[in-house]
Image 1 (cartoon, rainbow over the protein chains, first blue to last red):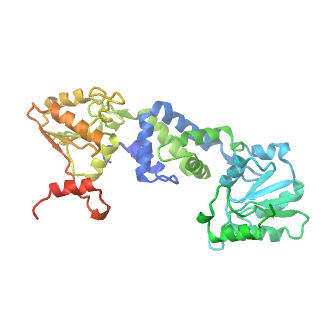
Image 2: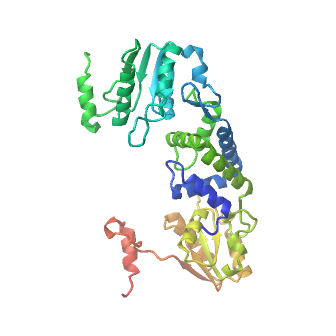
Image 3: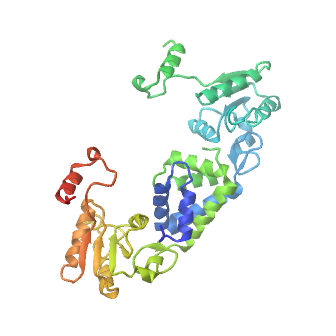
Length: 199
Length: 199
């Protein structure tokens, strides 16, 4: 790419570092943007600069917003006494898209990992425990991923809360809506069978 | 995503319009950027704003650069009398990565298409024909994609040059380097067989 000037090459290199884009798709994306530099590229650059300057983590729950305390933590209608614990902001967004949960969140930012030296302090678990009396939480819903790391972390939090009066629950496991048994793994089928309900 | 503030939602929507990214991967990319807002997101926004402000099409060949005439057209060492015709800037970049061609380019910006009302004028073919005497071109290499549209366009250009002294060539078709016969389509095998060479 001796022909593309340095600025364009630098942009392609930066774009290629995004998850889901490699060198080839970064080149395609940059060409696409350059062809629409007035209508798409300039607004995208402005939106990105604005978010880079204003985005921050909520001091209470770890969600991402543009204020010190996020919209959800500021919203008094969400002080329902329920606290949903998720691994990542992406999981919080997924829960919000579902529009089923009306309480507040606590974003761990990862899972416990001895290998990566991620302990309870790195995940803000002391802060989670402190929020329970502060905000009058009656139920902690552990919405962690159904992976070994997620479940290990869930058990750690459940143990830490064992002595308190708070109710600890977890998302149900079973057949996804629209799921076909033939495509499900054995573990999911087993979990769904064990948790079977009367029709 | 009622939780993500408006700026973040707007950024996700703009990112989701990039080729190769959908709504889901745009969310992932934006979260990735926000977590690295100082080291990655701000420089990316600056690089994008800079390219949006400075990128332009070369007035001579259609390549993208940051000057009215691109680096390749300004480079006197590339006045070899060979002109390589490509459909898109991405194809020009692919040729340059190969480092095999040392002449200049002509970027059509598409292929002839009656359906989309793209005729010779829209592709700058009159400008291509004008460059041949202006730049003392002796050979026009048609490096168009091996698609029906690419080959139709190649034949149109070859016909337009039929009366002139210029030599018109096209890229060889055959088995790609490292290609396995079992994975090639029948058309490629037929083309490779017809163009077989003595060992």
